[in-house]
Length: 511
Image 1 (tube, rainbow, N blue to C red):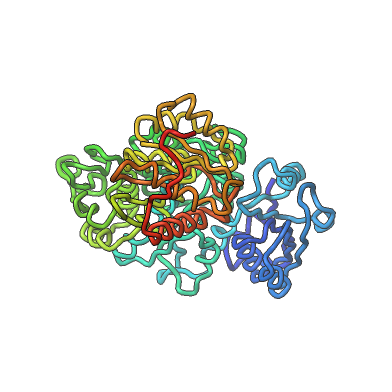
Image 2 (tube, rainbow, N blue to C red):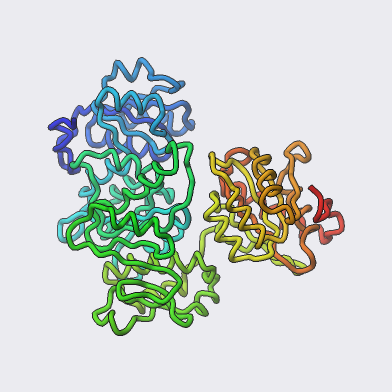
């Protein structure tokens, strides 16, 4: 049961003085939470198993207390502190001992996004109201769509900021003195789970929202596929204007159908087919809007063309879907089609997202290290048929069987990396035995990607593509997906610089 005091904390200008808050985790998110709460006058205890030297130094400077040590069980310092609220970083799963303790003892449990929603009026718009929020989630494509949406909104004359899981804490955007008209908030399933714990006072009311797609991911964290789906569905709750869903992924339609939205909110679909009167889609190579158009039953508005997108490297089918979703969100806020067209002509993808590293001697080397789950990897494979596929890493409890069965009809070969290699190799033996596969065992070399590139160059038959789309997290062997991609790109450049592929040390048939 939420206390009367917590129910009243719905503004930056509420009285937060002396509120006892325990903050779990001290990365960029945890520090933004602690910094915000101490500025508000709360009494803050930060608990973390480790911390960077910079954050550990800054916590006492901002007026919070820091306790470092194991969180495998509830620390005595936390019990003695008797918090009124626990604000957890997204890395803490529902089954974590401290999270379970908070539930059992009836302590309010927030994430950083709920705190940001409660204090969103710190820097209001010129009319005195807080910025609107647009929420974006999905198994694949969240970051690209978040960046696209913010770009399109800015092109339409609105002050928009991408934030959230994209790497900029929502609290930093809320506290930015520049102020914004719209916050475009990328949300992971972890953040959405915490939002789902909110009492009515802390529930978000987004202007528009989308779940781009749904496929199994983070199953260990959530405890199963149904719990993962339920977390994703929170994105549509209370939406005011537009619930944007993927017509080619019925799970997202069901989420919209089941969502408790604000009266008057519209369901807006997108896919690569011909759109209906409340959809965005593609007709004869033209991306069109039939949702936000006065005569949508009889005509459509042109946004851009697939030819124009191809010229700027945005024509992969899954990227086009992201563009349609972002366009729907932007159109819901009144951005004109011509502004969308012009902004797309200048937009470029992030590093490590289907990024062309090099093209040399007929081989295209593609870095899609950000494809950290099967859904993302499948999209990359479909966009690059015949590629030698670099796959593997930390599988996060996900079975790659279905992906590898599909890859059997697409990939020209595969190189398996990562700590969880055996399940991947077994899936190839079971579902795609005809695909040439090689395994890179870390002990074989001091540099994983050097060996991967040598093997891949030997597996490509003349002209072709080598695709890094691991379908797995990177933390087993790399610092991050960016580190994985950068090491791949560096190995490619070094290989090309040697000027020879004669030393490739693997035959296409070797296992």
